[in-house]
Image (cartoon, rainbow, N blue to C red):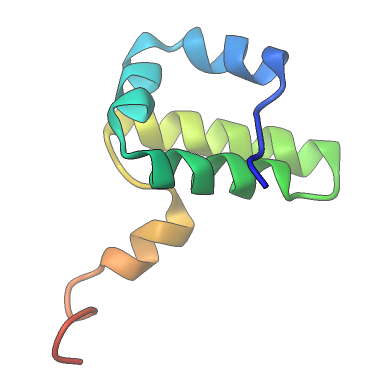
Length: 79
């Protein structure tokens, strides 16, 4: 089932136009995964921390840490 970010989280994200533009330019599956990663946390403080990580990663044009680990050199085809 699709997970949406609360309006307050979207406002915080849009406050960083570079991060928001990068996030919106990513494929729908990536955006869905990121929203789920943020909202699946049980504690509000963890959700806020993950939102901060998502915004910071997007501002740098990088994937969120759980996905960055999958994209390291030496991982993938042939291994």
